[in-house]
Structures are given as structure tokens and as C-alpha cells.
Length: 200
Figure 1: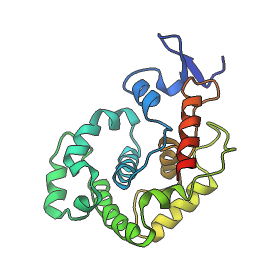
Figure 2: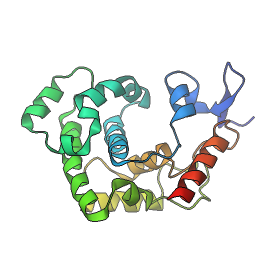
Figure 3: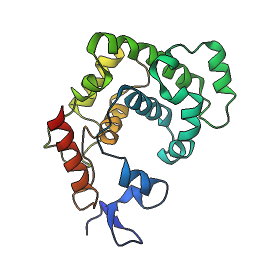
Figure 4: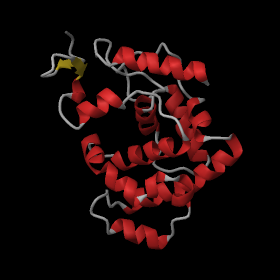
């Protein structure tokens, strides 16, 4: 067994970061599986931005609160948020109350509506940056593709979308399969990605 995996109480080898809840369930059922649909991808971009400087556990523990506070991350609804909504969100103890990140989420919703209008969907746009399948698991925290995606989004006015954050998005949403080679979930993610790509 290598250092990239840890064997859980159930005897299954998983990526080392997924040794406790809620990370274990997230790892086994979400992380790396293809994420589709504009609102789902928008939610992930927002949550990755809110996570900046914090642990992912913090975000997972607050995710349902975020969903309630941001109208299910419906792109059009969040794009219509006003300064009154910013103040409401700053007073919501159930989420990360960081003005810059809150304002970035609203700004990004507005940018997303424009991108959808121009590109057809967030899904086709983001998946257009997915790297080649030869990516080596766990080898880096950014890639040429995440850097290009970040630059493109920033050029379009998006915020809190740096190359490392965009690489985390790629890992989480199936554009990159970064499960360790010996991780029990890796084959499931590989199959799910292949199925998604053949259905596009």
C-alpha cells in the first residue's frame, strides 16, 4: 500500500484525505464523478471560491446552508441578487461571511448568464478545458488547462477563479480523475467519466 491511500475501518483503500466524515462520503459518492448542468457547475465554482484559505470540511459542513442562502445556486436567481442580498448573506452565520467572496459569487452569476448566452452552457464551456486522460493522479495542484481556464474566466470578468481553484474544480467535477491509483473509487470514477464522454 502506498502513501497516497489509507485503509478505512471498512477495509477499503481510499485517498488519504478521505479518512473521516464528511470527507469519506463526499470522496466515495461525489469527488471526481462527472458534474453536469449549469447550476451544479456554478455551485461548485462558488464553493471552490469560498473554500479558498479554508478547509473543504468547512465547506461541506456548510453546504446545505449555502444552497439555502444562494437559492440553490440557480444562476439566474443569484445574478439578480442586490446589495440587500449581500447584507443578508453577511448576516447569515450558516455560511462563510466574507464580503469579497459573496460579491464574487453574485458577480460570477452575472458573468455565467453571459457565458451561457454566448457559449450555450457552462457545461460545454468548462468541459472544453478538460485535460487529456493521461493526467497523473495527485501530481500537481494546477495544470496548463486550469491556467488557461482561469485566464479565460478572468478575461470574462469572473472572480476567485485562480488556476489552483480551477484545478480543484476539475478534480471535483470529473474533468480530472485524481483518485490515487490504489483508491477503491478510482475505477468507478474512470468508468463514469468514460460514460459521460461517450454520451456527449
